[in-house]
View: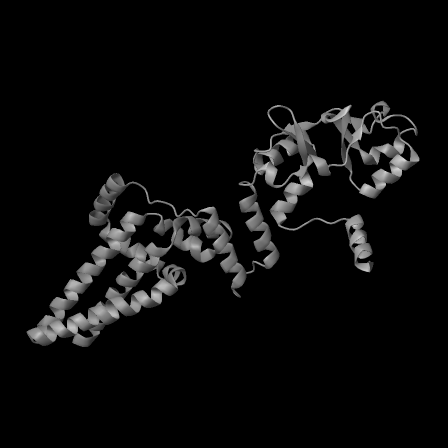
Length: 327
């Protein structure tokens, strides 16, 4: 009978010790997210875990009471020094080290399956634990959530991609990294400089050579200027040229030429430019300095390429690569 009581006390000590480390190591935000997405174990543990200070107080109180009782009981059935050594060995090895090592590795699984025990102990210890927990809530405030920097999030995604236990693949890793980094990029880092921009004067006539040249460039939108390249007056939509009469000037077209366009600065952040493009339903923005000097263009495709970390190639690009490989 003595051994049975001692064993029961060691098991209780192990439960209190292991659950203290295991349950308190679970992040409440993570549990809430998992529960939201259908994780039954997280949904079971979360209501108890979110009462952090009361849970901590209850488990520590139970652990102290059980360990003290175990020491006293061992002392009643053995001599002083032997009792001390036995109690210490039982508490340290089987009441602390082993359960904490095991439960910390499987905290959610173990916590969900012993939730009945935790609930019972919370009810029993309520009169003592609740006032202490309320005092801790008042003094320390709510539990601080675990937040990650963008660099840490990128590392987490990379670790998931490297793990055989994660469904995250290389493409998803690349896109998430791009999405986390692109908002720090400036327009000047992505834009096409003015000297490389294909553009035409508004008085350019729609001749056969003009159509051939536009087709060769392969761009769907082209900036249009008046007199000098710095004086941007609109955007030419190449696909709408099919419905226009030949030999008229660009400014005389009915649908292809639009004098409405958006301007951005070289120092603007890409996320702000993306939001502006989506709001204005524009796929191309003119970049100019504070002195209205035209210095380049940026397209929606340029921004998307930064997000997905990969160049978007169309049929013309593929054909150009084939031709260049032949020479």
